[in-house]
Length: 348
Image (cartoon, rainbow, N blue to C red; front, side):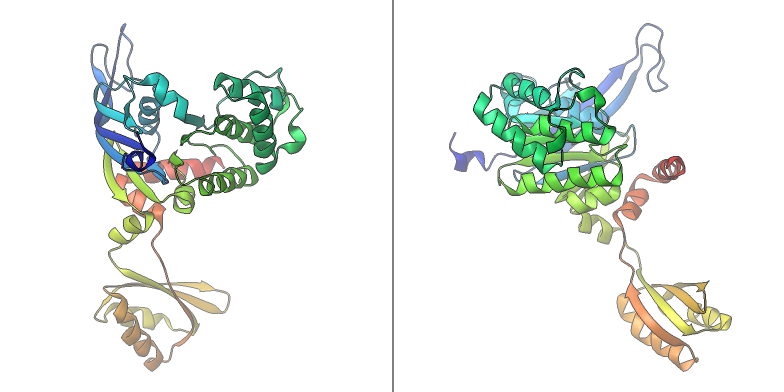
């Protein structure tokens, strides 16, 4: 197939993919009784174009990892079809594995007694990368993720962050066309997480044919990296588009934050009674008042500020509050996501 013909084939495509786990031997899976099934994926259809960083967002247990395992030939779907570069993941397993790689957050792959360089060289040989090419690529990758000084260090002695950066190098040493990142920065500190994200962006920019499918429940990470995202909940896709699409699509009101030098409590009630004002909330900070407004439409901000000035208020600063991907995510998947996020924050 010519490159021009290949370019019209999606890098990743799923059509009505289902996966049901059956409980056996008197044991339960996810609360299901023996003999009954737990549906992890329920008709998932996605198309990821070549050259994209595509984010799959969902809370724990939503089906993200199950879908990744199907796409990387580690798990068979119960129904539907899944394709990598036009190849069926159940029939073309060897060919699919030759052009993909995967990194999972917290994975302990490899052999602790090997050095970092030996570990990466070994994986390069699994993929048939010539030794000379492999060594040059290993040096480049280690330098890029800040592990150049650890090349001859034993794997068992690496910190969690170093090990995860090494795992990224391991995935890229075969020069895959399609990279699957399953929660790649979970448990990493800020510096290590940033190093991973920065190199993923750099790696993508070097070749327009490369594609990344990223699963994460860190909304800032998806917002920073992804061209398109899909939100999965209870095994179903509930929203899809760019991150801006999702944020704009769920914003009911225009929101503004004003910093006030002169303010009286009575102004708040006055604003709430104005046409176009949905809500007004204030918070005292030192000698200034922070006013948050929710308006029916953006154009109501001009008459609203005029009313404040006429009442004796004085506006020092004004900014529009843009919706966040996290807010859109919580609105889409409900209270369960909010409870999970609060639990994660409590553990930090």
